[in-house]
Amino acid sequence: MTAFDDRLKAIVGPRGWKTDADDLEPHLTEWRGAYVGETRMLVAPQTTEQVVEVVRACADEGIAIVAQGGNTGMCGGAVPDQSGHQVLLSLSRLNRIRHVDELNYSIEVEAGCVLSDIQDAARDADRYFPLSLGAEGSCQIGGNLATNAGGVNVIRYGTARQLVLGLEVVLADGAVLSSLRSLRKDTAGYDLKQLFVGSEGTLGIITAATLRLYPDPGETVTALVAIRESGDAVRLLADLRGALDDRIEAFELVSRRIFEAVERAIPGARLPMDEEYPWYVLMEVAAGSHHEVVETALMKAAETGLVVDAVIAKNSAEADRLWRLRHSISEAERQLGKALKHDISVPISRMQEFLRRGDELLASLQPDATLLAFGHVGDGNLHYNVRLPDSLSGEERESAGERISTAILDLVDQLGGSFSAEHGVGQAKRELLKRYRRGTEYNLMRRLKETLDPQNILNPGKVI
Ligand code: FAD
Ligand code: 2HG
Ligand code: ZN
Image 1 (cartoon, protein in one colour):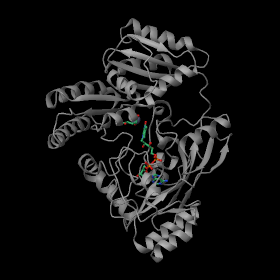
Image 2 (cartoon, rainbow, N blue to C red):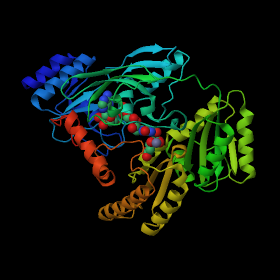
Image 3 (cartoon, rainbow, N blue to C red):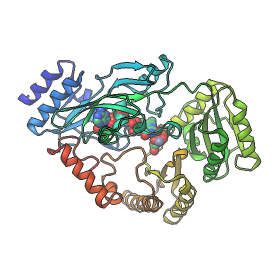
Image 4 (cartoon, rainbow, N blue to C red):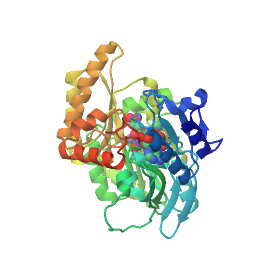
């Protein structure tokens, strides 16, 4: 045991550290098993002051720190490298809901709060916190902010970035950026807090946040709508937006193939339509007591042929069952085995073109590949995942994967899109960041990293 290890233990106290292999195991493996790391010690501070002390100790010795929230991220950002030298800093014990300000429609929370606990705290105060995603029962708000998470309600409320009013961040030298303001308007200089949103633990450790709350959207209508072609979802959304103003809370595209995988993988999961259709949209609309507005809009869409079938949830239990189908997709996909993941976004007006040209690319490059596409089409963000046939050898898989991913992501780039819409970069997409964020944009990111973390101790080997 070194003096450094003793120093860390003294900072966080006897219940604040782990070195036992069994205790560490869940923290060292990415949830799909795609990345496995080692650590010299996991520390779990309970206060911002303890985070400061841990960061100072690491800075004194030039030892790297990997921040970890719920470890549900998709790009291996929260897993340390395999050297066994890095310190894993878990935020899980820094998890108090500090304050709900009902008049200001805001909430102050510590970084380790589980997302669903924040949703509950807002609900208890008759308010609404709209960030919602499949991992909400285990991911933490610090991780959501550090990855600028999206989820299913972005279409109405924006990503994590739009939901943050203030942040508290511990910088690489232990200084604290204390900007927990709860203002809607503030033009006093640069908006520093936004630098840390989406920085994936490479620029600072987020310890607390002030978040926007909203009025409860009230009664919502949840509908599963069948469409003929994936591209029809875009036209349907444009038409429904006209009829329903900004009341569309979620608009998710899912293929038949994906729902079949969910039905196979998740006990009790079943699509509530007997007829089979190739594509579906799961949508939710804040309709108040005017459910008929939604029904009328869907009937109109049926008359024009955009909607070929629809099921409207009769009560919240039916709505929950529909959302369970949607939120089980990642787990079902994991059970199917490794897929090529493409978390892409394009301007919605280019989405139909992307879907058409993406299909053409797949058909020409690997006609026997299986497209597993789903996602937040209302935000121009699709998980355009591809499964290669089991018959390919390891080497064939690698070269086919490389060709397909490059072709798809080049297409996205040509259409003015992004290779990473909501999952971040982590260790999985560093090369892509170099490829698609060239020149001044990439250089400025580098300079920011060098300025804020000159010793390169904050999550090195991730993002940049
Ligand atoms: P972690 O995985 O622990 O960390 C993610 C990154 O943030 C790492 O780089 C880590 O170092 C850094 N980090 C964590 N905490 C802090 C902190 N306090 N300060 C600084 N850096 C920190 N994402 C979406 O955007 N939309 C979805 O719809 C969605 N659905 C999902 C569904 C499932 C079933 C799963 C498993 C994941 C899903 N995700 C989705 C992935 C998503 O990025 C994460 O769930 C979430 O935002 C990460 O939070 P976390 O606490 O688990 O972070
Ligand atoms: C979702 O939308 C998540 O469910 C996960 O972002 C996407 O597993 C995926 O590819
Ligand atoms: Zn998603």
